[in-house]
Image (cartoon, rainbow, N blue to C red; front, side):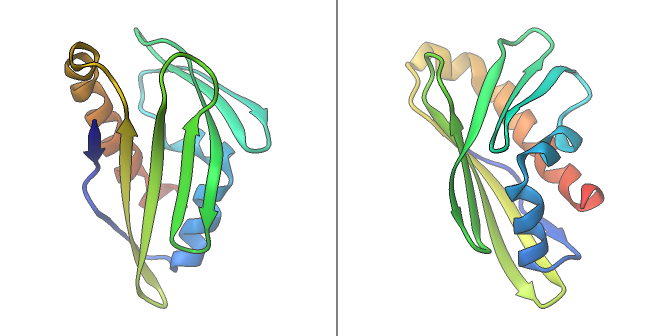
Length: 131
């Protein structure tokens, strides 16, 4: 299952956006209002839970300066990744799109597609005001 957020334009350089997303503790500021838990586990790993959903642990898996950050599931039964693709528009502006990729059975994919899509959209739209 592959889902993408809308592309969001940010009045910051690609490097500034990359630096913000590279520091995983900043994801707390991007979380939706229905977050019930956020906890840093390590410098590159955090746990979060949304109301009515199981806890999810994400770990920074890959970083390509200044264009890409990949967070992946750290443990648990589900294998998925959350990728931040950063495109430089000019020296002071960039564009970000978040992508979710996961390998789920059709029933699970049908159940989580809506909530994950809304989650991605919330994360992406909060980036400009959080940096």
